[in-house]
Amino acid sequence: MYTLFSRRIASLRGVVVVLVMLTCNSLALSDEIHDAARVGDLKRIQALLDKGADVNAKDDNDGATPLMLSSYKGYADVVHALLAKGADVNARIADGPFFGRTALIIASLEGHIDVVQALLAKGADVNAKENHGQTALIAASTNGHVEVVRALLAKGADVNAEENFGQTALMMASYKGHADVVQALLAKGADANAKENFGQTALMMASYKGHVDVVHALLAKGVNVNAKITGGRFVGRTALMIASLEGHADVVRLLLAKGADVNAKDNNGWTALMEASQEGYVDVVRALLAKGADVNITNNNNEGVTALMVASLGGHADVVQALLAKGADVNAKITSGPYAGTTALEMAANNGHQDVARLLREQGGGHE
Image (cartoon, rainbow, N blue to C red; front, side, top):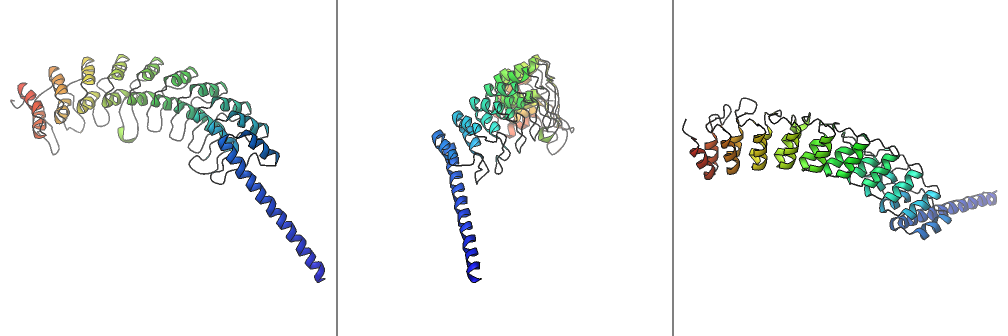
């Protein structure tokens, strides 16, 4: 009986040893095929697959597969070989900062058109989203890969898909200034008036960055030039205010030519003229004044702040001259708050801007 029991134990031990050996061999093959995929070693990958390596083996760190790794690097020959061996074209990264990405999203982000086409031909989900809601189209549009964008659109990519913050491919391409991508998206029906979670539009994003060609393309599609931000810190701002604040005179002129409201106010009562005057962008100030900007308009909360005051406070002499030439009230005063009664002259003088103070005195400042 003891002998029979001992034999059984020995037999079980043998099975365990075999299983451990097989497991170790499988792990070794898994590590090797990942390493080979990272460097595009096609011959090594084929040899490992012939030895029984799992074509869908997942990396220990984030769950990336050989297909994902080769797609990231753009190794089209390796991608074809892995797909031919049954690689899961829609597998997702399982962990880490890139959680949820597929090989298609990865290849699209990197602009590898040959890989993208191979994945699409094998049934890659063109509208799959990663953990942050980004699709392959949004990824490619963000990085300006127009050929990839066209390939995805041809396969039915949702041109108006949104990531978790409500941003679309058009918004990202507009923000980055990829005019060719913007044109491709608009041609496929991208919503030029779509808003992200805070109410920002593609036009606002392009205006913020000063991308004149993108702004022109969006305006040509009839985008709402007077749309306002609806959430966050900058509620009420329009594309014109944003462009004026950033000093993009060419964009400002384009927006004005398409009917931008030159006297629109944000939720604090600031206008495009005030924004440009505060920053000292004289070309923008002149463009706004030429289109009828109210030189004496004041902000909200009964404070009475004018463009002349903020330009004087900042010491922007050329802006002060432009405003005075258009009839700015040199003796206007702050009407409430701790600085009530303060004029543009006092702001300039108290902050050491004597050249501006002199200009204001010459125009009657301090003589009511």
